[in-house]
Image (cartoon, rainbow, N blue to C red; front, top):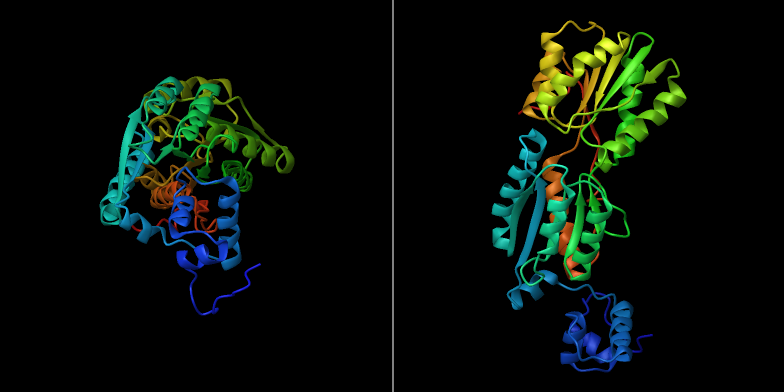
Length: 351
């Protein structure tokens, strides 16, 4: 324990760490910056002094002193999906705001639901040029292995929107997708006005966020609304034309459909079908993400409810967590918790 306690009104400094640990300032600097050439016992003494003193490093000042620049990249699917386009816009907006904070943000687009393209990109990242990467993509063994290799090279990794195993990535930024599915099921069960079947539209069976939403949806429908039956998912790959082409056969096969839960993108195709074809007037439709298209569908009554997440919060949180991981400093979990938003026709926020 420190035999020379500091005045509690003073903030401990590196000088105090050196004094308490009995080492030089140069040694403290090497430990704080993870430089080689320091014995394990000395590193332990320095960290013990840090804990005893309650020292919190001013990373902004330290980075300014050594002219540190954070280089962060967002790997996003290359698609006309309005939600992804909103993420792109937020990355650009936050990048402009953070330029003064010695932080650069860029996006790299990959084919939707293509794990091999993500793997190739991650494996080519240079830790000398990239401090952190946020990945929005499918979960496959190849992607998981590539994420592990990326972290092993010293690059921080955040799973964005769709999670990866916690043992592979550093953090997840997105809503609790099981809870989102359960929320959609609770709304569906209370909104439908007759017994029947529910259609679940997914983007890909490789997309963990969509799988988790189906898991949560089935849990609540099965336990609380036994008069409703969820039929096999249709896989729309977030492509409006594909979704539009699949729906006539679904309605022909299940004439008693009373609800649709669209857990993915491609809502333009769903909306087109609902507006052009003869569907039951009491059909309940719940979808994801507040975009210009889904906003209009909600306000017109084509959609009954939206489950959404704030794209600005997603990007800001990913940036904070990547920087905190790169600096090995604590973060505020409450600040990084992404809220599940529920929108009905009458509470849609202004544009």
